[in-house]
Amino acid sequence: MSDPIIYLDNNATTRVAPEVFQAMAPFLTEEYANPSSVYPFAGPAASAIDTARQQMASLLGCQSEEVIFTSCGSESDNAALRSAIKTQNGRRNIVTTCVEHPAILNTCRDLAEYAGAHIDYLSVDSHGRIDLDEAKALITEDTALVSIMFANNEIGNIYPIRELSQMAHAKGALFHTDAVQAIGKIPVDLTNDLKDVDFLSLSGHKFHAPKGIGVLYRRNFAPFTAYLTGGHQEKMQRAGTENVASIAGLGVAAELAAKHIQEENTRVKALRDRLQEGLLATCPDAMVNGDIEHRLPNTLNICFKYIEGESILLRLWDRARVCASSGSACTTGSLEPSHVLRAMGLDYKALHGTVRLSLSRYNTDKDVDTVLEVLPPIIRNLRDLSPFGRD
Ligand code: PLP
Image (cartoon, rainbow, N blue to C red):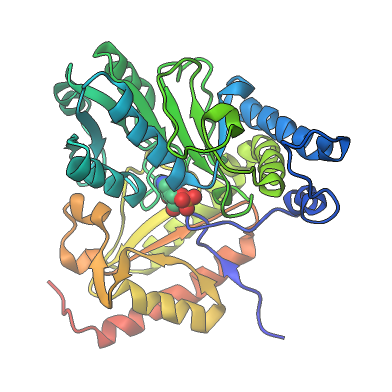
């Protein structure tokens, strides 16, 4: 039998929790009715959606009617951005950051090209941090929406959402946050601190629900127009027959997220820290990317100068079946360095040797031990073969 997989790519996607799978199963087998149908056979499907809406609301600290089920984080992001450009009485500006996920960046580009929107991008410093004074200067009476991610998918930085949402409201703009990477990893409570957040996007597959299910939180009475139009589902806010099984699974994943949030910030964080310290101690010319003080507890973005991240990943898989990500996305056959690391001004010798290790509650001490054993010799060996040379 081959060795088990060591899965350290939980910011890409997570495994479905067994409890989630169990909650989904009836709606993929016997309980197949359309939840909008009127006969009693549709009752369990309709009530599964109600229950999941409450479970989700309880995780977020909001009202259940503020939860709109969507197909993914990207759809939720699209819905929030596209709606704001239509509902904000002629305001044409969106303020966002240059380190957002492509779901935001490419939607902004599209709105600029086809809807006359004008986009301002906040810059970041070498640790990926934004400057609140720059944000304050960019948000004006023409700003329809400020959209800032809660936490960054590559480096794990957590952004000051409370302050930014207050700034947006002070200028009469709406505020949206892409919280796809934050949910399940850090507490997100819309009740108190975050009462100026109008819209929030999340995605089930980042916290042990299946792929293809998401939520758009819409604060009660926040101006909104549907992105997907059609039937009456989700109170006319998102058309399409509901994905009942995935919604039921998402509800259970939300309950599990609340139950395990403490563990994410203690045991999982300790595993991440041990990995970080072990690698820094054994690999010369290694550096952690991001804001060490304000970072997701599960994320380690680390660069090993003078070598290629992709070569590291291939060898990690070959030696110990370790799954991780690099700081480069392979697009159309060329290795394009990450827009996040480029925005931080990393020099190319560091940029290309970046690896993201992201953990979950399913990781163990043994996983960390294995990586600490196999990765340093991989780095040494690749450096010996490196075409980059040293400084
Ligand atoms: N936003 C962030 C920050 C993400 O990390 C991702 C996925 O990686 C998305 C949005 C898109 O979510 P989905 O895959 O559900 O469309």
